[in-house]
Length: 171
Image (cartoon, rainbow, N blue to C red; front, side, top):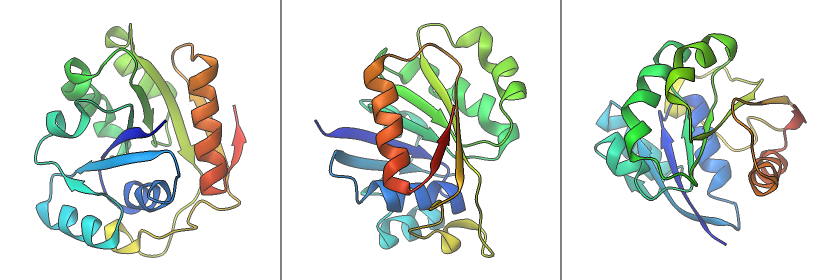
């Protein structure tokens, strides 16, 4: 199966996850959205995304996997803005470093959505899309904290991606 992927926020983390997912044999099209069009251009030039979306709706509609890679404080707002465009089968992963606060903010709207925290504990010297690179997550802890019950297939996808990026998974 090939998974359609959306990445919302194409800074260091979002760009790096895009570069890793571009190598995934199960990847379909990767759509990206960022508030800065210049970032979209760079992300596409680097190969982190296949398609530049000019709205979150365009990015997430029809996606099997959605990665929210924005600053933590904006994750609830981003989730709220994409919620109505998500299919029941879509798996949403946020790369934010804070889980309890995010969960408290989005929990009223999470029913019927497959959602997990997916936080690689890594970084780099260069910020933003220009610092995005393959191998950024290799060997680092990857904290996975499902906010909703995930089916075996969803857990398998998460573990497959964790293996792809070289992270050491902790649930």
